[in-house]
Every structure is written in C-alpha cells, then in structure tokens.
Image 1: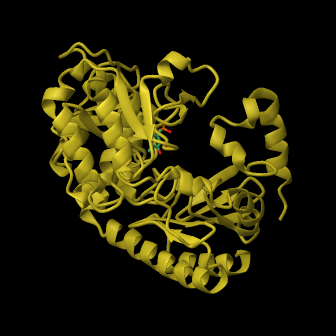
Image 2 (image 1 turned 90 degrees about the horizontal axis):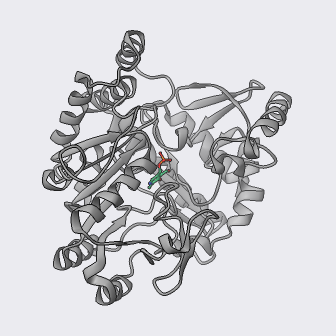
Length: 424
Ligand code: PLP
C-alpha cells in the first residue's frame, strides 16, 4: 500500500505541530497516521488514494456517514452562506434546543458550547456552584475530555493528576471509583457525602471499553446521589443520540440524571458540546445565575444547522434501524469468529457501537481496569496494522469504540468480518 503522500504530510506536520497532530489520540497510529483526503458514505480515502471502510466515523459524530443527505447539506450551506456568525442569538439555536428538550425527558433547558470537554467542564462547575460543594466522583480510567477535574489517576485514597500541568490540589477534589463498584461509591459517600457535588459517569463506558453497567447500577447511583443531595451527571458525549436513539442512553436505562453532557452527534460533524438538565439547575448558569459560562462560538449557526438537520433526518428516516441492524450483524459475526479463533477475546457493544476487546479470559470487562488488563499492546502493534492493510480503519487504540453510520452497507459488514477473520 503506497503511503508516500501521508508520509510527506506527516513530516511537514511534525515540524509545525506537536507530534504532528492536533489531538493526542491521532498519533496512536503507527508508524504514523494516514492523512484523509475525503470521505465517501462509510469509507474514507487517504492522501495516496487508498480507500478504507471507516468504523471510526470521526470518533463518533458522523451518525449519517460521510456523504450527508441533501437536506442536511443544504441546511449547512445555507447557514454558512449567510454569515457565518454574529455574536448575538439566532433562531436555529432555539430550534435545536427545542428539539433536544422535546426528545430527552431529563432535559428541560440546555446550553450549547463547543466541545465535549467544554460541556463536562461547565457541568462540573455548575454542579459545584449549584450544590456549594467541591468534590466529584468519576469512574477510574473513564474519560470526560481534556479537563483539569477529571485528568486524574489512582483511587479514592490516592488520587494524582494524570497529566503534567494539573495541580495536585485540583486532583484532590476528584474521587475515582471503579465502574460498577457500588461498595466503592458507598464508601466515597460515607467519607465525603456532604462535600460531593456530583457523580459523573458515562451510562455505558464507551470511551474506555466498551463496558456495560451491571443491572441496577444506575438506579443505585440515582438513589445514593438523591439521598446525599448530590447531582447525577450522565456524560452522553458518545452515547447521546446514538444509544437509545433520540431519547439517548438514559431512556434505555430509564434513568433521569440531573445533568447530561452532549457532544459529537448533536453537532452533526461540526465542533459542539452541550449541557442540559433540570431547569432549576441550568438556570444557575450566567446570566440567569451565578455560575459563569460563556463562549464566542457557542451556538454557532452552522453547527446548529448541522445538528438539527442531522437529528431531524434521523427522526424522519430509518437511521437508527439501519445502524443498529448493521451493529447487530457485526457483533453476531464477530462473536462467531471470536468463538472459533480467539475465545479469550470479548465482543462488546450495543446499538451502533462495537469492539473486540483482547481480554485474556473471554470475560466481559466490568470496569476500566479489566479493559486495561487486556492485550492492548498486541491489539495496537499487530492487529490494527493487519486490519489497515486489509483497508479497514478501526479506532486507533484498544480503548475507543467503533461506530456504524447510515452510510455503511451490509457489504461493508461482510468485508469487515472477512478482514477480522484473517487478522485474528
Ligand atoms: N466525554 C466523553 C465520554 C468523550 O468520549 C469525549 C471525547 O471523546 C469527551 C467527553 C470530550 O469531548 P471532546 O473531544 O469533544 O472535547
């Protein structure tokens, strides 16, 4: 496979950008990332003309695939041609807000921001401002964006920053507990209950997994946060408008969080984040409340158009049936292949998310430590390269999941399963 152009672009990038990339995870591709020229439905074509079946889908935002339906493209182009932005409100922000409020029962009010990181950062500040408390409980190994409060390692007793530049004193306000570990959460509340502003969790660990919650785990989190006057924040940056369709993962689990963070799909492929929830809490954001939050680009008309058109298209067409059916086919096919060729591995996922985790005992992981204990190095060094050589683009590390889009076809699924057979 010729990759001369990608190599040359990477050399240029290395001389002007740290690691040659604008987001750390992109450099996980070895020996260097391929540069994409353009997308085509469920595929991407790189700078050397190689075509890959793309299950990364921009790391999740592209529910509809690379070629957006005409109505979506038209909405985006119209908005881009009109401005593109003004520093004062526009109707389309209200339209998208109303759409989300209509479809996600826990969301009575919403604020749009520009990334998932900004959404979770603002949600943590809001939870602290609303409760007057300092600490947040998060999942060990979970990811809520590149924000100070959650870039931590360790456990409830010994927490430390996971990145240079984060002060130890910041990390000490965060209590990491293993996903699915009710005892650890109970212990955190016993020790710090009156200072815990919120528990923040992905409803399904999608950014470090994929790991499903045990039956009743979210009910338990809802009860214990209520009992102690803390908030429950669902980080639905990945699962939002993907798992459970337009009602999001919380509708699947029948849980009403106090706050929800969104990103990815809600912006239809453009930079976005949002935090929504109970009106009384969201109203604490400036200017109606004392918790400061602002952004030059927030509610950007082009992003709002892309998000609204995407979600309206999904509501009016069989998008979720399509992606979930292909997801079922992928998981079923992979389960057969793994059973035959590598029974120590695990097939994970739901709806339109899927992953083969290189576990050592065929046991579905229960938390991030189980995922970390998988053969992550083998996955990265050997497996990923073999899939790429067969022109299948998978997520760049063992921990991120893969996504089916409306642009994918059954033929993409069949070719991918063949490639897995060879690579495994
Ligand atoms: N929360 C979760 C669960 C995520 O997966 C991500 C990113 O992948 C974020 C937050 C941060 O979003 P962003 O990369 O848009 O800042």
